[in-house]
Length: 251
Image (cartoon, helix red, strand yellow):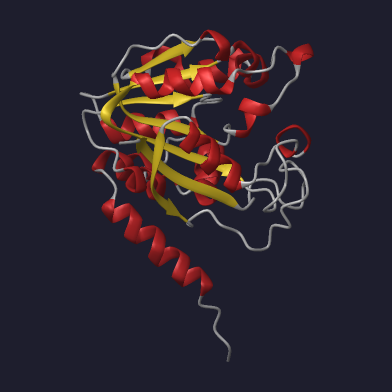
C-alpha cells in the first residue's frame, strides 16, 4: 500500500511553526470563534510561519500596509499582545473594495483593542518617524505599479511611498513582503495585467530605496503555479507561488 506522506509532512511543519509562534498567535489560531473565512485562509496564508519569520514579538508596534480586510492585522494584533499596537492602513480604494460593512465585522465593538485603523492615500502617506518595529506589505508591492484611476487608484510615486515607510521604521525595524510571483524576466507591466511581479524587480527596487535583504522564505512557494496567468484565475487563486522577503535598513 502506498502512503501519501504529504498531509503528515504539512501537519508536522504547521505544528513546528505554531510551536515557535507567540502564545497569542497560537491561541488565536485555535479559537473556534474566528470566522470560517479566516480559518480557511490559514491553510494558504500560513500566518504562524510569517510571524515567526519576521520575529514579531509581544509589545511591538506594527504597520500593516494596504491591510485590506484585516486578516494579517488580526494575526499581528495577537502576536504583539495587549501591550503592542497595530496600525491597519488602507487607502479609500481598498476600503471601497472590501466594503465598510465587512470591515466593521472585523473591528466592531472594539474587538481588536490594540488596533488603530489608518486611512491614507498612498501619495499622501504621513507616518510618525521611527515608530514601527515591523511593517507588513502583503500581496501589494505590485500595487505600487498598478493604476486604476476610475476606481480611485492613481499612479503611485513608489519611491516617495517607500521612503515614508522606511522613515517610519525604527533603526532596527523590519519590513516583511509577500507577493505573487511572475516569471523571471517579466517586466513591470505584469503588475497591471496579472497582479504579479518578478521577484528580481522587488529586490532591485528595495535596494535602490535603501533597504537591505535579510532573508527569504519559501513557505508560500507553489511549483505548480504557471506564473503567467492572473492571480485571480480560478485555477490558481489563493494558491499562487509567492515570494516572502525580510528587509531592514541598509547600512
